[in-house]
Amino acid sequence: MSLNLTESMTISYFGEPWGEPAARHHRIPTPVGVPCADCGTPIVEGDQGNRTRFIACPNDCLHPEYAHRECMLLRVFGHQMGCCACNNFTNIGNARAAAILFWQLHGARFDKM
Ligand SMILES: [Zn+2]
Ligand SMILES: [Zn+2]
Ligand SMILES: [Zn+2]
Image 1 (cartoon, rainbow, N blue to C red):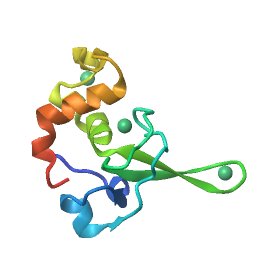
Image 2 (tube, rainbow, N blue to C red):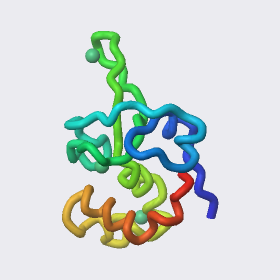
Image 3 (cartoon, rainbow, N blue to C red):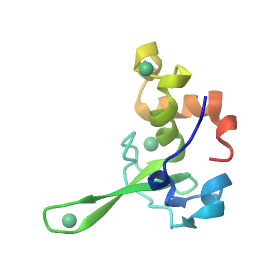
């Protein structure tokens, strides 16, 4: 199984530095209070994550989107690791709870990512 994040997903990161993002990309302030693009839960101080992309709006400005590290990895790798809706994994409560459980089960293998 190959685990590769695309360049666009690791452009900037927030929270405690880890692995590849810290080595190759720049750290941005934690966007406290901004809802995670994946789970909808507001980001709090101490979370880790990435600025995932910019959304163009009708006023011609670009709005950044942020996501928790574990939410993003769940979205990208959850299916191939059996942690997805196909396996009833995401029915455990809410999207944030699912991502945290995913992280408890599989987070160690993403140390460098
Ligand atoms: Zn999230
Ligand atoms: Zn705008
Ligand atoms: Zn699936």
